[in-house]
Length: 183
Image (cartoon, rainbow, N blue to C red):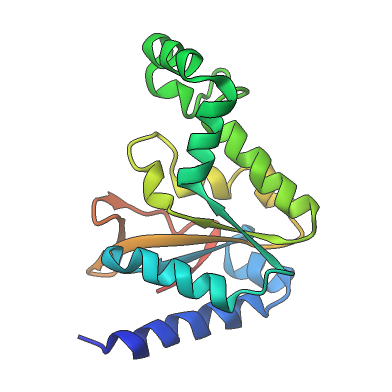
């Protein structure tokens, strides 16, 4: 088992190297995408987020905490409205192919778009919040907002790796498509 500090530094060095590439290089390596999937052990989520906030320059990066975004979304529409929508539409309140506007996914993509429009890179953290909400990293990375971006999206991704396969939170196989994977 690698020493935590050495592994931690190695991953952040690799992330910083990837972020120093121009967007065209990132897109080539990411199959046309503009995202970086930053993979680290599930149990170290808070440690990696804290270190990321120290290492990534606030002039270039904005952290979007998905836990806070979900709370903000529910507060914006109102708890009663959210409960009614969930009762009537189930998980489609989070992401819907039929009616995307008004969903949490739409709200999250608007937040990402605001950061990109400010000419900064969004950094998604506490992505474990998305587990079982029918929102996967590929939905975010393949959204037009991200695919048209002039800055890369960084996704902090707690996962386990088994035989080369990444499992989000140790459970859901992760897509490597449309992103550079730092692991």
